[in-house]
Structures are given as C-alpha cells and as structure tokens.
Length: 133
Image (cartoon, rainbow, N blue to C red; front, side):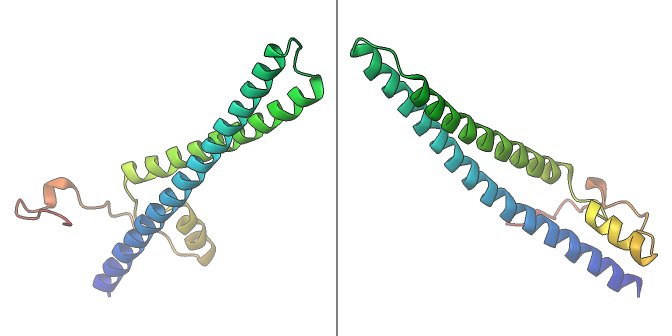
C-alpha cells in the first residue's frame, strides 16, 4: 500500500503544479487587462487636463473626480492581481510540499496526519535524468 500512497502524493503534487500554472496564466492575463484599463484611464485624464488647459481653463472638479476615481480603481485592481501573481510564482519557486495548506486542513478534519517524509532532493536524481522535455 505505501507504493500507492507515493503514487497518489505525486499525482496530487502534479495536480497542484498544473492548477498553479493555469491560475498563473489566468491571473497574468487579468493583470495585463487591468493594467491596460489603468493606462487608458490615465490617458483619458491626461487628455482631459490637456484640453482644458489649452482651452484656457482648468479641468472641472466633477470630471477630475470621475476620471481619477476610474484610474484609481483600475490601478488598485492591477496591483491586487500582480500581488496574486507574485504569490503564485512564489509557490511555484518554493516547490510543492507533501501537503499544501488546503490538504493540511482536510487531513486534520479527517483525523489523518500528513506524511513526514521530505520530497526527493536533487542529490537523489540520477545524472541521466534530464527531466521533462
């Protein structure tokens, strides 16, 4: 039975890696779009200010509030998504432990304890193993 446990652990780890890769792609795309929206909002604010100043007046307070609020909203969304992206990339760089945070909670609820065996190190990989291609 320990062999099947190892196989299950490796499949779970591979599943988490695949899910993180999908999440990273999705968050990266959403962050890019949010950054584009923020850039367009900044451009609209700049154009409005330029037109008002070249017309000899100042940008009215209502237009400034509306445009700057839009810019702030898109900027906050982009920052939030970039933070999520950094978290996902940090998890990928740190590797995948035997049990992730969600798995630890479910194993605690089921009354089982997570295995204490560490993941294989680079020293245990044979020199002919080139990894995935």
